[in-house]
Image (cartoon, rainbow, N blue to C red; front, side):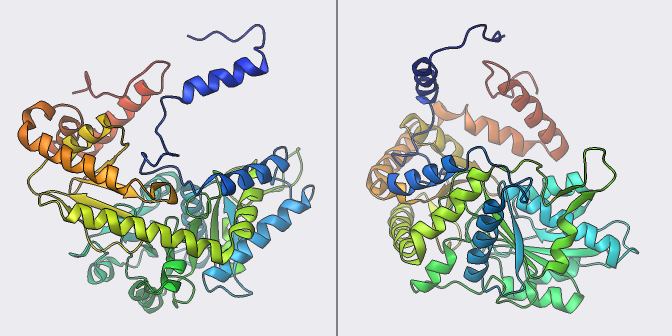
Amino acid sequence: MLAFPQDGLSRDEVLASLDEYRAADGDWQGGKTWSLVYYAGEEITQLAEDAYRKYFHTNALNPFVFQSLKRLETETLSMVASLFHGDDDTVGSLTSGGSESILMALKTYRDEARVLHPEITEPEVVLPISAHAAFEKAAHYFGLKLIHAPLADDYRVDIAAVESLITPNTILLVGSTPQYPHGVIDPIEELGALALKHGLRLHVDACLGGFTLPFVRELGGEVPPFDFAVPGVTSISADLHKYAFAAKGVSALLYRNADIRKFQYFAYGNWPGGLFISPSATGTRPGGAIASAWAALKFIGQKGYLEITQSILDTTKKLVDGINAIDELYVLGEPPAGIFAFASDTLNVHALADILEHKGWVIDQQVNPSNLHFMVTPAHAGVEEPFLRDLRESVEILKAHPEDFAAGSAALYGMSAAIPDPGIVNQFIKEAYSRFMTLGGEFSFEGLV
Protein backbone atom coordinates (compact mmCIF):
# COMPACT_ATOMS: atom_id res chain seq x y z
CA MET A 1 0.00 0.00 0.00
CA LEU A 2 1.26 3.47 -0.89
CA ALA A 3 1.14 5.73 2.19
CA PHE A 4 -0.37 9.20 2.04
CA PRO A 5 2.52 11.68 1.68
CA GLN A 6 3.53 13.60 4.77
CA ASP A 7 5.57 16.25 2.98
CA GLY A 8 4.92 17.47 -0.53
CA LEU A 9 7.43 16.93 -3.33
CA SER A 10 8.86 19.79 -5.29
CA ARG A 11 7.25 20.78 -8.56
CA ASP A 12 10.15 19.34 -10.54
CA GLU A 13 9.98 16.06 -8.62
CA VAL A 14 6.26 15.69 -9.26
CA LEU A 15 6.60 16.34 -12.98
CA ALA A 16 9.63 14.07 -13.25
CA SER A 17 7.64 11.25 -11.65
CA LEU A 18 4.83 11.73 -14.14
CA ASP A 19 7.30 11.56 -17.02
CA GLU A 20 8.75 8.37 -15.56
CA TYR A 21 5.31 6.79 -15.13
CA ARG A 22 4.13 7.50 -18.64
CA ALA A 23 7.33 6.23 -20.29
CA ALA A 24 5.77 2.75 -20.55
CA ASP A 25 2.53 3.99 -22.16
CA GLY A 26 1.66 3.29 -25.77
CA ASP A 27 3.48 5.47 -28.32
CA TRP A 28 0.57 7.45 -29.74
CA GLN A 29 2.58 10.43 -30.96
CA GLY A 30 4.75 8.14 -33.07
CA GLY A 31 1.74 6.38 -34.58
CA LYS A 32 2.38 3.02 -32.86
CA THR A 33 -1.01 3.01 -31.10
CA TRP A 34 -4.13 2.31 -33.17
CA SER A 35 -6.86 3.54 -30.80
CA LEU A 36 -7.70 5.69 -27.76
CA VAL A 37 -5.74 8.81 -28.76
CA TYR A 38 -6.61 11.14 -31.65
CA TYR A 39 -3.57 13.23 -32.43
CA ALA A 40 -3.46 15.80 -35.22
CA GLY A 41 -0.15 17.44 -34.42
CA GLU A 42 1.26 19.79 -31.81
CA GLU A 43 -0.30 22.99 -33.17
CA ILE A 44 -3.85 21.72 -32.66
CA THR A 45 -2.93 20.02 -29.40
CA GLN A 46 -1.37 23.18 -28.00
CA LEU A 47 -4.42 25.22 -28.97
CA ALA A 48 -6.74 22.76 -27.21
CA GLU A 49 -4.51 22.77 -24.13
CA ASP A 50 -4.36 26.56 -24.02
CA ALA A 51 -8.16 26.83 -24.31
CA TYR A 52 -8.58 24.22 -21.59
CA ARG A 53 -6.19 26.07 -19.29
CA LYS A 54 -8.17 29.30 -19.60
CA TYR A 55 -11.23 27.46 -18.23
CA PHE A 56 -9.38 25.10 -15.89
CA HIS A 57 -11.29 26.22 -12.78
CA THR A 58 -14.72 26.72 -14.34
CA ASN A 59 -17.70 24.44 -13.93
CA ALA A 60 -20.63 24.15 -16.33
CA LEU A 61 -22.75 22.80 -13.47
CA ASN A 62 -23.95 26.36 -13.05
CA PRO A 63 -24.23 28.26 -16.36
CA PHE A 64 -25.73 31.21 -14.49
CA VAL A 65 -22.36 31.81 -12.85
CA PHE A 66 -20.21 30.89 -15.86
CA GLN A 67 -22.27 32.41 -18.63
CA SER A 68 -19.33 32.27 -21.02
CA LEU A 69 -19.51 28.47 -20.77
CA LYS A 70 -23.18 28.57 -21.75
CA ARG A 71 -22.17 30.59 -24.80
CA LEU A 72 -19.31 28.22 -25.67
CA GLU A 73 -21.56 25.17 -25.28
CA THR A 74 -24.46 26.51 -27.31
CA GLU A 75 -22.17 27.83 -30.05
CA THR A 76 -20.38 24.47 -30.22
CA LEU A 77 -23.67 22.60 -30.44
CA SER A 78 -24.89 24.99 -33.14
CA MET A 79 -21.76 24.45 -35.24
CA VAL A 80 -22.09 20.68 -34.89
CA ALA A 81 -25.81 20.80 -35.70
CA SER A 82 -25.12 22.71 -38.90
CA LEU A 83 -22.65 19.97 -39.91
CA PHE A 84 -25.43 17.40 -39.40
CA HIS A 85 -28.14 19.25 -41.36
CA GLY A 86 -29.85 20.50 -38.25
CA ASP A 87 -32.04 23.60 -38.17
CA ASP A 88 -33.12 26.28 -35.72
CA ASP A 89 -35.08 23.69 -33.75
CA THR A 90 -32.06 21.43 -33.20
CA VAL A 91 -30.82 21.42 -29.59
CA GLY A 92 -28.45 19.38 -27.49
CA SER A 93 -25.96 19.07 -24.66
CA LEU A 94 -22.24 18.49 -24.31
CA THR A 95 -21.31 15.41 -22.30
CA SER A 96 -18.10 13.85 -21.03
CA GLY A 97 -17.83 11.41 -23.93
CA GLY A 98 -19.60 8.97 -26.21
CA SER A 99 -20.65 6.66 -23.40
CA GLU A 100 -22.39 9.46 -21.51
CA SER A 101 -24.03 10.69 -24.71
CA ILE A 102 -25.42 7.20 -25.31
CA LEU A 103 -26.50 6.84 -21.69
CA MET A 104 -28.31 10.17 -21.82
CA ALA A 105 -30.01 9.35 -25.12
CA LEU A 106 -31.42 6.09 -23.78
CA LYS A 107 -32.42 7.71 -20.50
CA THR A 108 -34.19 10.44 -22.48
CA TYR A 109 -36.20 8.00 -24.57
CA ARG A 110 -37.05 5.86 -21.57
CA ASP A 111 -38.43 8.87 -19.70
CA GLU A 112 -40.26 10.13 -22.78
CA ALA A 113 -41.91 6.73 -23.22
CA ARG A 114 -43.04 6.76 -19.59
CA VAL A 115 -45.00 9.93 -20.32
CA LEU A 116 -46.18 9.33 -23.89
CA HIS A 117 -46.63 5.55 -23.68
CA PRO A 118 -47.39 4.62 -20.06
CA GLU A 119 -48.79 1.30 -21.30
CA ILE A 120 -45.23 0.17 -22.04
CA THR A 121 -43.91 -1.24 -18.78
CA GLU A 122 -40.90 -3.10 -20.23
CA PRO A 123 -39.43 -0.79 -22.88
CA GLU A 124 -37.26 -2.33 -25.59
CA VAL A 125 -34.56 -0.97 -27.87
CA VAL A 126 -33.77 -2.68 -31.17
CA LEU A 127 -30.15 -2.21 -32.18
CA PRO A 128 -27.44 -3.96 -34.20
CA ILE A 129 -25.31 -6.55 -32.46
CA SER A 130 -22.40 -4.32 -33.54
CA ALA A 131 -23.67 -1.27 -31.63
CA HIS A 132 -21.25 0.10 -29.04
CA ALA A 133 -21.08 -1.61 -25.65
CA ALA A 134 -22.16 1.67 -24.04
CA PHE A 135 -25.71 0.79 -25.08
CA GLU A 136 -25.42 -2.35 -22.94
CA LYS A 137 -24.25 -0.21 -20.04
CA ALA A 138 -27.15 2.21 -20.53
CA ALA A 139 -29.69 -0.60 -20.63
CA HIS A 140 -28.19 -2.08 -17.47
CA TYR A 141 -28.36 1.25 -15.66
CA PHE A 142 -31.81 2.33 -16.84
CA GLY A 143 -33.78 -0.92 -16.90
CA LEU A 144 -34.17 -1.22 -20.66
CA LYS A 145 -34.28 -4.43 -22.68
CA LEU A 146 -31.99 -4.57 -25.69
CA ILE A 147 -33.04 -6.61 -28.70
CA HIS A 148 -30.03 -7.38 -30.89
CA ALA A 149 -30.43 -7.49 -34.65
CA PRO A 150 -27.95 -9.56 -36.70
CA LEU A 151 -25.67 -8.17 -39.38
CA ALA A 152 -25.91 -8.75 -43.11
CA ASP A 153 -22.99 -10.12 -45.10
CA ASP A 154 -21.58 -6.60 -45.47
CA TYR A 155 -21.52 -6.21 -41.64
CA ARG A 156 -24.28 -3.57 -41.72
CA VAL A 157 -27.38 -4.29 -39.69
CA ASP A 158 -29.98 -6.47 -41.42
CA ILE A 159 -33.00 -4.20 -41.98
CA ALA A 160 -35.49 -7.03 -42.42
CA ALA A 161 -34.32 -8.49 -39.13
CA VAL A 162 -34.73 -5.13 -37.40
CA GLU A 163 -38.34 -4.83 -38.52
CA SER A 164 -39.10 -8.39 -37.45
CA LEU A 165 -37.85 -7.60 -33.94
CA ILE A 166 -40.08 -4.54 -33.42
CA THR A 167 -42.83 -5.19 -30.88
CA PRO A 168 -45.45 -3.07 -29.08
CA ASN A 169 -42.79 -2.58 -26.36
CA THR A 170 -40.22 -1.05 -28.73
CA ILE A 171 -39.46 2.61 -28.05
CA LEU A 172 -36.21 3.15 -29.99
CA LEU A 173 -34.12 2.02 -32.94
CA VAL A 174 -30.35 2.51 -33.15
CA GLY A 175 -27.86 2.73 -36.00
CA SER A 176 -24.14 3.53 -36.11
CA THR A 177 -22.11 5.71 -38.49
CA PRO A 178 -19.82 3.92 -38.54
CA GLN A 179 -20.13 1.06 -36.12
CA TYR A 180 -16.99 0.43 -34.09
CA PRO A 181 -16.09 -3.22 -34.78
CA HIS A 182 -15.83 -3.07 -38.60
CA GLY A 183 -16.02 0.62 -39.46
CA VAL A 184 -19.03 0.32 -41.80
CA ILE A 185 -22.12 2.54 -41.84
CA ASP A 186 -25.49 1.09 -40.91
CA PRO A 187 -28.35 1.81 -43.37
CA ILE A 188 -29.67 4.91 -41.62
CA GLU A 189 -32.17 5.88 -44.34
CA GLU A 190 -33.86 2.48 -44.07
CA LEU A 191 -33.83 2.67 -40.27
CA GLY A 192 -35.38 6.13 -40.48
CA ALA A 193 -38.15 4.79 -42.69
CA LEU A 194 -38.82 2.01 -40.17
CA ALA A 195 -38.89 4.51 -37.30
CA LEU A 196 -41.49 6.64 -39.08
CA LYS A 197 -43.53 3.61 -40.14
CA HIS A 198 -43.74 2.28 -36.58
CA GLY A 199 -43.86 5.61 -34.73
CA LEU A 200 -40.47 5.12 -33.07
CA ARG A 201 -37.47 7.25 -32.22
CA LEU A 202 -34.11 6.69 -33.96
CA HIS A 203 -30.74 7.43 -32.42
CA VAL A 204 -27.68 7.61 -34.66
CA ASP A 205 -24.39 6.86 -32.93
CA ALA A 206 -21.90 9.00 -34.87
CA CYS A 207 -19.42 9.13 -31.99
CA LEU A 208 -16.70 7.81 -34.30
CA GLY A 209 -17.67 9.21 -37.69
CA GLY A 210 -19.34 12.49 -36.87
CA PHE A 211 -16.28 14.58 -37.70
CA THR A 212 -14.96 12.56 -40.63
CA LEU A 213 -17.94 11.35 -42.69
CA PRO A 214 -19.27 14.82 -43.67
CA PHE A 215 -15.81 15.67 -44.97
CA VAL A 216 -15.35 12.31 -46.68
CA ARG A 217 -18.54 13.06 -48.58
CA GLU A 218 -17.30 16.52 -49.52
CA LEU A 219 -14.06 14.95 -50.78
CA GLY A 220 -16.06 12.74 -53.12
CA GLY A 221 -16.39 9.63 -51.00
CA GLU A 222 -19.58 7.59 -50.98
CA VAL A 223 -21.27 8.39 -47.69
CA PRO A 224 -25.01 7.69 -47.49
CA PRO A 225 -27.23 10.16 -45.59
CA PHE A 226 -27.01 9.51 -41.85
CA ASP A 227 -27.95 12.70 -39.99
CA PHE A 228 -30.95 15.00 -39.56
CA ALA A 229 -31.31 15.07 -43.34
CA VAL A 230 -32.85 11.62 -42.88
CA PRO A 231 -36.51 11.77 -41.86
CA GLY A 232 -36.95 9.70 -38.73
CA VAL A 233 -33.59 10.49 -37.12
CA THR A 234 -34.36 12.08 -33.76
CA SER A 235 -30.94 12.26 -32.10
CA ILE A 236 -27.22 12.01 -32.90
CA SER A 237 -24.16 11.54 -30.72
CA ALA A 238 -20.73 12.65 -31.96
CA ASP A 239 -17.49 12.81 -29.99
CA LEU A 240 -15.50 16.01 -30.20
CA HIS A 241 -12.53 14.45 -28.42
CA LYS A 242 -12.12 11.95 -31.24
CA TYR A 243 -11.83 13.22 -34.82
CA ALA A 244 -12.66 16.81 -33.91
CA PHE A 245 -9.42 16.76 -31.80
CA ALA A 246 -10.72 18.50 -28.68
CA ALA A 247 -9.36 17.61 -25.25
CA LYS A 248 -10.83 14.59 -23.52
CA GLY A 249 -13.56 14.28 -22.64
CA VAL A 250 -16.31 16.00 -24.59
CA SER A 251 -19.08 14.73 -26.84
CA ALA A 252 -22.12 16.32 -28.45
CA LEU A 253 -25.61 14.88 -28.06
CA LEU A 254 -28.10 16.53 -30.41
CA TYR A 255 -31.90 16.22 -30.62
CA ARG A 256 -34.19 17.20 -33.45
CA ASN A 257 -36.11 19.50 -31.07
CA ALA A 258 -36.40 20.65 -27.47
CA ASP A 259 -39.54 18.60 -26.88
CA ILE A 260 -37.31 15.52 -26.87
CA ARG A 261 -34.36 17.02 -25.01
CA LYS A 262 -36.43 18.05 -21.99
CA PHE A 263 -36.66 14.38 -20.99
CA GLN A 264 -32.87 14.28 -20.65
CA TYR A 265 -32.82 16.77 -17.79
CA PHE A 266 -32.95 15.86 -14.11
CA ALA A 267 -34.46 18.34 -11.68
CA TYR A 268 -34.97 18.30 -7.92
CA GLY A 269 -36.72 21.23 -6.28
CA ASN A 270 -37.02 19.99 -2.69
CA TRP A 271 -33.37 19.96 -1.70
CA PRO A 272 -32.21 22.17 1.22
CA GLY A 273 -29.19 22.97 -0.93
CA GLY A 274 -31.35 24.85 -3.42
CA LEU A 275 -33.07 24.21 -6.74
CA PHE A 276 -31.09 21.57 -8.58
CA ILE A 277 -31.08 20.77 -12.30
CA SER A 278 -28.57 18.78 -14.29
CA PRO A 279 -28.60 18.21 -18.05
CA SER A 280 -26.59 14.97 -17.97
CA ALA A 281 -25.26 12.21 -15.74
CA THR A 282 -22.45 14.25 -14.25
CA GLY A 283 -22.89 17.15 -11.87
CA THR A 284 -19.61 18.98 -12.30
CA ARG A 285 -18.81 19.48 -15.98
CA PRO A 286 -15.24 20.70 -16.59
CA GLY A 287 -15.30 24.00 -18.42
CA GLY A 288 -11.91 23.28 -19.95
CA ALA A 289 -13.25 20.43 -22.08
CA ILE A 290 -16.05 22.63 -23.42
CA ALA A 291 -13.63 25.45 -24.21
CA SER A 292 -11.28 23.09 -26.01
CA ALA A 293 -14.12 21.77 -28.18
CA TRP A 294 -15.19 25.27 -29.20
CA ALA A 295 -11.57 26.23 -29.84
CA ALA A 296 -10.84 23.17 -31.99
CA LEU A 297 -13.83 23.75 -34.27
CA LYS A 298 -13.03 27.44 -34.62
CA PHE A 299 -9.31 26.89 -35.17
CA ILE A 300 -9.37 23.98 -37.59
CA GLY A 301 -12.44 25.00 -39.57
CA GLN A 302 -13.88 23.23 -42.59
CA LYS A 303 -10.72 23.62 -44.67
CA GLY A 304 -8.58 22.13 -41.93
CA TYR A 305 -10.91 19.18 -41.35
CA LEU A 306 -10.95 18.46 -45.08
CA GLU A 307 -7.15 18.36 -45.12
CA ILE A 308 -7.04 16.13 -42.05
CA THR A 309 -9.68 13.80 -43.48
CA GLN A 310 -7.81 13.51 -46.77
CA SER A 311 -4.69 12.50 -44.85
CA ILE A 312 -6.67 9.85 -42.98
CA LEU A 313 -8.15 8.51 -46.22
CA ASP A 314 -4.74 8.34 -47.89
CA THR A 315 -3.21 6.49 -44.96
CA THR A 316 -6.15 4.11 -44.68
CA LYS A 317 -5.98 3.19 -48.36
CA LYS A 318 -2.28 2.32 -48.10
CA LEU A 319 -2.94 0.16 -45.06
CA VAL A 320 -6.02 -1.60 -46.46
CA ASP A 321 -4.35 -2.28 -49.80
CA GLY A 322 -1.23 -3.57 -48.05
CA ILE A 323 -3.18 -5.86 -45.73
CA ASN A 324 -5.33 -7.27 -48.54
CA ALA A 325 -2.13 -7.98 -50.50
CA ILE A 326 -1.09 -10.48 -47.81
CA ASP A 327 -2.58 -13.83 -48.84
CA GLU A 328 -3.53 -14.89 -45.32
CA LEU A 329 -5.31 -11.63 -44.37
CA TYR A 330 -8.34 -9.65 -45.52
CA VAL A 331 -10.15 -6.48 -44.43
CA LEU A 332 -13.75 -6.95 -43.26
CA GLY A 333 -16.44 -5.17 -45.29
CA GLU A 334 -15.94 -1.86 -47.05
CA PRO A 335 -15.18 0.75 -44.37
CA PRO A 336 -15.39 4.31 -45.77
CA ALA A 337 -13.11 6.25 -43.46
CA GLY A 338 -10.28 5.49 -41.09
CA ILE A 339 -11.80 2.66 -39.04
CA PHE A 340 -11.37 -0.93 -40.17
CA ALA A 341 -10.58 -4.47 -39.04
CA PHE A 342 -8.87 -7.42 -40.67
CA ALA A 343 -9.16 -11.16 -40.13
CA SER A 344 -7.70 -14.45 -41.36
CA ASP A 345 -9.12 -17.85 -42.24
CA THR A 346 -5.81 -19.63 -41.64
CA LEU A 347 -3.99 -17.76 -38.86
CA ASN A 348 -4.85 -16.99 -35.26
CA VAL A 349 -4.94 -13.19 -35.40
CA HIS A 350 -4.75 -12.93 -31.61
CA ALA A 351 -1.36 -14.63 -31.74
CA LEU A 352 -0.47 -12.28 -34.59
CA ALA A 353 -1.34 -9.33 -32.36
CA ASP A 354 1.05 -10.61 -29.68
CA ILE A 355 3.90 -10.73 -32.20
CA LEU A 356 3.11 -7.21 -33.39
CA GLU A 357 3.01 -5.95 -29.82
CA HIS A 358 6.49 -7.36 -29.26
CA LYS A 359 7.49 -5.10 -32.15
CA GLY A 360 6.01 -2.08 -30.36
CA TRP A 361 2.56 -1.84 -31.97
CA VAL A 362 -0.48 -1.50 -29.69
CA ILE A 363 -3.22 -3.59 -31.33
CA ASP A 364 -6.92 -3.82 -30.43
CA GLN A 365 -8.38 -7.33 -30.65
CA GLN A 366 -11.98 -8.33 -31.36
CA VAL A 367 -14.12 -11.44 -31.73
CA ASN A 368 -17.07 -12.79 -33.74
CA PRO A 369 -15.16 -13.16 -36.00
CA SER A 370 -11.69 -12.89 -34.51
CA ASN A 371 -10.03 -9.80 -35.98
CA LEU A 372 -7.65 -6.93 -35.31
CA HIS A 373 -9.05 -3.41 -35.16
CA PHE A 374 -7.54 -0.09 -36.30
CA MET A 375 -8.51 3.58 -36.06
CA VAL A 376 -6.39 5.77 -38.31
CA THR A 377 -5.48 9.33 -37.33
CA PRO A 378 -3.11 11.94 -38.79
CA ALA A 379 -0.42 10.51 -36.49
CA HIS A 380 -0.32 7.38 -38.67
CA ALA A 381 0.73 9.19 -41.85
CA GLY A 382 4.18 7.83 -42.60
CA VAL A 383 3.99 4.65 -40.50
CA GLU A 384 2.19 2.63 -43.18
CA GLU A 385 5.29 0.94 -44.59
CA PRO A 386 6.98 0.21 -41.24
CA PHE A 387 3.74 -1.32 -39.98
CA LEU A 388 3.11 -3.36 -43.13
CA ARG A 389 6.69 -4.60 -43.07
CA ASP A 390 6.31 -5.72 -39.46
CA LEU A 391 2.92 -7.25 -40.27
CA ARG A 392 4.36 -9.31 -43.14
CA GLU A 393 7.24 -10.46 -40.95
CA SER A 394 4.82 -11.36 -38.14
CA VAL A 395 2.68 -13.44 -40.48
CA GLU A 396 5.73 -15.43 -41.57
CA ILE A 397 6.87 -15.93 -37.96
CA LEU A 398 3.43 -17.20 -36.95
CA LYS A 399 3.21 -19.53 -39.96
CA ALA A 400 6.61 -21.00 -39.18
CA HIS A 401 6.16 -21.42 -35.41
CA PRO A 402 2.43 -21.36 -34.45
CA GLU A 403 3.12 -23.46 -31.35
CA ASP A 404 5.28 -20.69 -29.89
CA PHE A 405 2.28 -18.38 -29.68
CA ALA A 406 -0.41 -20.70 -28.34
CA ALA A 407 -0.44 -18.87 -25.01
CA GLY A 408 -1.05 -15.16 -24.48
CA SER A 409 -3.89 -13.51 -26.38
CA ALA A 410 -4.58 -16.63 -28.44
CA ALA A 411 -5.29 -18.64 -25.31
CA LEU A 412 -7.20 -15.81 -23.62
CA TYR A 413 -9.58 -15.18 -26.52
CA GLY A 414 -9.84 -18.88 -27.29
CA MET A 415 -10.93 -19.60 -23.74
CA SER A 416 -13.54 -16.84 -23.74
CA ALA A 417 -14.95 -18.11 -27.04
CA ALA A 418 -15.17 -21.66 -25.68
CA ILE A 419 -17.37 -20.68 -22.72
CA PRO A 420 -21.01 -20.80 -23.89
CA ASP A 421 -22.44 -18.74 -21.01
CA PRO A 422 -21.69 -15.00 -21.55
CA GLY A 423 -22.51 -14.36 -17.90
CA ILE A 424 -19.54 -16.48 -16.84
CA VAL A 425 -17.26 -14.60 -19.25
CA ASN A 426 -18.55 -11.28 -17.89
CA GLN A 427 -17.78 -12.38 -14.33
CA PHE A 428 -14.28 -13.51 -15.31
CA ILE A 429 -13.65 -10.13 -16.94
CA LYS A 430 -14.82 -8.27 -13.84
CA GLU A 431 -12.64 -10.37 -11.53
CA ALA A 432 -9.58 -10.05 -13.75
CA TYR A 433 -10.06 -6.30 -14.17
CA SER A 434 -10.52 -5.85 -10.44
CA ARG A 435 -7.19 -7.57 -9.87
CA PHE A 436 -5.53 -5.44 -12.54
CA MET A 437 -6.78 -2.19 -10.98
CA THR A 438 -5.16 -2.91 -7.62
CA LEU A 439 -1.72 -1.50 -6.94
CA GLY A 440 0.78 -3.56 -8.95
CA GLY A 441 -1.93 -5.79 -10.40
CA GLU A 442 -1.83 -7.48 -13.81
CA PHE A 443 -4.68 -8.56 -16.08
CA SER A 444 -4.94 -12.37 -16.03
CA PHE A 445 -7.62 -15.07 -15.95
CA GLU A 446 -5.21 -17.39 -14.13
CA GLY A 447 -6.86 -18.87 -11.09
CA LEU A 448 -10.35 -17.90 -12.25
CA VAL A 449 -10.92 -20.92 -14.51
